[in-house]
Image 1 (spheres, rainbow, N blue to C red):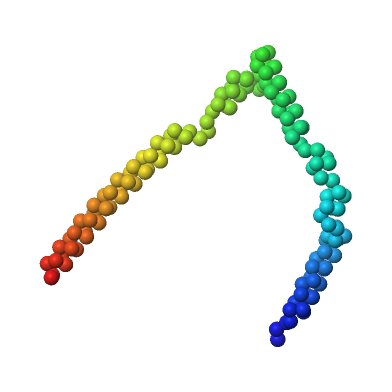
Image 2 (tube, rainbow, N blue to C red):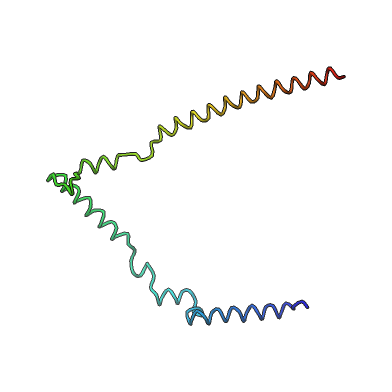
Length: 131
């Protein structure tokens, strides 16, 4: 037998209440109350200021090490700059490779087209001879 709409709604409501009860009393509180209890990022402050201060300190340390010619485990500031300039993905080489692939695929396509044209011409000739 099929359930009526009221029975289905009642079962869904019971299921939702059981799920809320399983997760404790926070499930019954609105989201705004939960944020007030837990504290939000706006109240605690964001991490941008901390990250900015850390970045400035690192830059100052880098400049100091460069001025005083200080190296860390044999790595100087010149090597750090080289690594920052180093391109791990050489786009010029990739462009050349893809250009070669596209040229070869175009040439292959032209060869295939020529072969298809020859085959279709042969078939047309056969049909004309039969008629």
